[in-house]
Length: 232
Image (tube, rainbow, N blue to C red; front, side, top):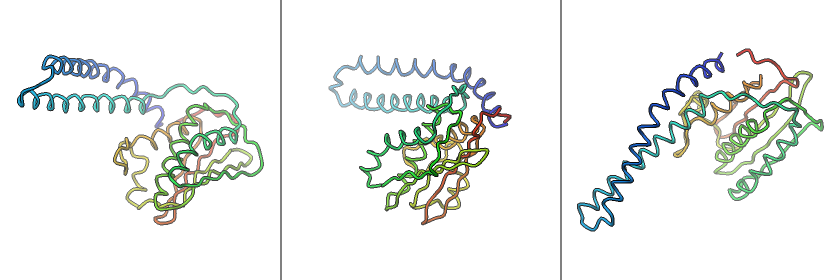
């Protein structure tokens, strides 16, 4: 149901966003022209005006960014499914993020059950999910800890876990983790986990969160081994 609701919202907000983006672009362009007209702004008065215009210009850019992020969340793009070796994809993602984690002093390990797990995936979108979870896990290990990426399977599904032994979540943060625009990070958009859940559910899968303050956090993704029609 959530996927269909997001699809309807996406169609609605595409037109709404168009009506907002055009005026914002015009405002931004005119701010630039006014700043150019003021030239070097030698007088104290002109310098104050330029500073104030710069503040307004930065807010226009911020609003444009918020609009784009929201549209990226409510749009439900069509999946480009292909048979993918899940373990190979996870190794590639870990290799991509590992230098960043090494710089932060956070070790990362991959654990598997020895089997190859081939699933129907949109590799690019699922890669974005895992990158987001790994970076969240890395941030949670700011006072020490490690990150583990684990895979296993049963007869019906492949299971991916991203586990950290970091700070864990308080009950308040845990309850809001998948709420759009909720973030504990200063520069966070609050759309990473809601987008990750949407992508997983588009694949006919589920994502589960478990966390304990002071002990760490685990995200468990379950994906059907065979492509399933998404009924939500």
